[in-house]
Image (cartoon, rainbow, N blue to C red; front, side, top):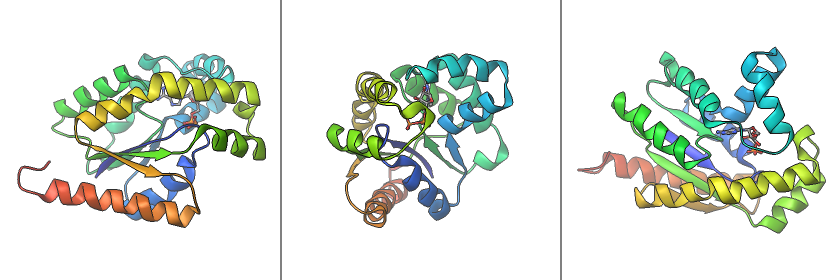
Length: 194
Ligand code: ADP
């Protein structure tokens, strides 16, 4: 299974992704984590990415795409993966489709973790991370709404989107995530399915 999890900053994507990779037994591809690792390692990509991330902006598509392409090429991604934080813009989604198509692969399903904006802000105030100060956080929400939210339509048109309610206990939400995955599995198994 190749699945994408999309959600605004603070939606609880990290928690659900951890559970989902254990459940699916596939590698977890988090571009946020890859970028933070590049920053820690002080690579040229890390140095460039840091500037953008500190300002709550998205890192340029070309940089992220190069990283993801390389990762998708490793053998452990052959039979599937969970994409977390990628794609985040329409060009990234289109390039991902291209990349997969050339390898006779496809995205099996996209899960949207939906959480209202006031709840995101309430959660942010209750936790702390370097890129979580209120000003930077608001910018990340705006960048989600303007650059990432259009992807929901893109995948809905492909018939791949499952939107789930991101409010409630982590277990309860994971129950919804699992239902979405089961729906993708049934669809892939159906005649004429992917
Ligand atoms: P969150 O989901 O909480 O926003 P992430 O860990 O996914 O956090 O990402 C942190 C930051 O890394 C983002 O705000 C952005 O600057 C950068 N980033 C991560 N993934 C991408 C991507 N696919 N394209 C561009 N920038 C990205």
